[in-house]
Amino acid sequence: MFNESPLIFYLLLLGVVLAIYLFRRHRASQKASATYAAAAEAGLIEPPSLHPLIDPVECLGCGTCASACPEGNVISIIRGKAVLIEPTHCIGHGACAQACPTGAISLVFGTEQRGIDIPFVGEDFQTNVPGLYIAGELGGMGLIRNAIEQGRQAMEAIRAALVNEQSNYHDTFIIGAGPAGFAATLAAKQFGLDSVTVEQEALGGTVAHYPRGKLVMTAPVDLPIIGKVKIKDPSKERLLEFWDSVEKKSGVSICYDERVTDIKSIQGGFEVHTTKNIYNTKTVLLAIGRRGTPRKLEVPGEDLGKVVYRMIDPEQYAGRNVLIVGGGDSALEAAAEIGEQPGSKVILSYRNASFSRARQRNREKIEKFSADGTVEVIMESSVREIAPDHIVIEQKGEIHKAANDDVIICAGGILPTMFLKSIGIEVDTKFGTA
Ligand SMILES: Cc1cc2nc3c(=O)[nH]c(=O)nc-3n(C[C@H](O)[C@H](O)[C@H](O)COP(=O)(O)OP(=O)(O)OC[C@H]3O[C@@H](n4cnc5c(N)ncnc54)[C@H](O)[C@@H]3O)c2cc1C
Ligand code: SF4
Image 1: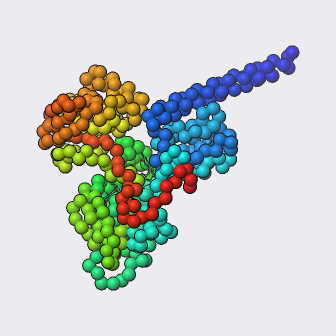
Image 2: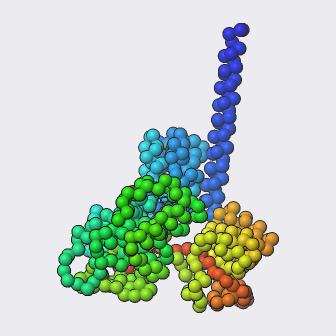
């Protein structure tokens, strides 16, 4: 009797610890199921690029993959198996696949339901069209470090391929100033090439679109001209500031607010058509990423300076009349965040009858803000005109005119596939394969 007491005590303790563990696991599984259900309800179940495919037979449910993912709440365990619960948040780090002890994870593009178009790129970064090169995420390999590395290597390949003959063509023409295009631009300068870089938006590419304050996870990189750079856990703002200072110090020149609209093969190279100019060049490097070009409304006044295609900082809209167009998460988040700014007056215009493509939490917030007057929501409406001091919106034949200082259009992007095909680049559609 005297000897049994401690044993019973330890068994009881073990039972309590086990019960707490199972309870926590069950709760985490329920939470993960709810997150996945919300993503599925909003139709957000297709990962944008490279992502893990989990074999449920091999998966032990140990959760190592979930802990390894630097983005946080992307993979979780549901009923003992790993599941990609926020597919659209996956950016292809691949840390989960490396961490999995059973090899249950393979990294693939696309899903059975939705294919992803990957252009043909050779080992020297050249496409099937001689002289046309691709670097960065467009070629399928995501992440800042890979994009920088590829931008540099692609420029090395271009330099090696250039024939030294008299020509008034530029040596190379770089499209995009995200990490890949920026690194390529620095490399072109370092190699003494005659190059031009154009960017439809601003320096940084997709990085400039991350949510405010996002911690950027990136391993040390070798930046041309600058050398090895190791920035530990910087925010996106710090990383953009750093690139900005590199741009100034290195003396490279990038043509901003200029979009490439067409590339034609001509004798000795290419004719590149942009929204501002036509350039002749021997080679072209496409570093345009996979986000595409913002979709326009094509209405009068859209070319006014007050029209933008993403919200950067909600605070800049305090005290202003703002029109937001769109019905996805980015439109609803912009409307809610700007609506909360002191003195702002926000109109949210959407062409459909419901916000079915947005997450539930955003829909609920907008419903609340619509009810309390923080945001004026005009459903089944279209913008007819953007004037310097007002906007005109039509809703079921009725015309609304409202004072306006800023317009933010969140109507999605036009993916680059059509553009690639139109210039002769072969594209392979992947349905859940590497
Ligand atoms: C939310 C989110 C978080 C992420 N977090 C991380 C992270 O923490 N760490 C990490 O390593 N990676 C992260 N990534 C991935 C990383 O941002 C991308 O892999 C990387 O930016 C790809 O670089 P890129 O230069 O190939 O393309 P992009 O960065 O997409 O740049 C392409 C540029 O080309 C321009 N462009 C496109 N078409 C044209 C045209 N016709 N004319 C002129 N210019 C054009 C675009 O405006 C853009 O600036 C994240 C991605 C997302 C979406
Ligand atoms: S690390 Fe591998 S085995 Fe463990 S939960 Fe993730 S996929 Fe399953």
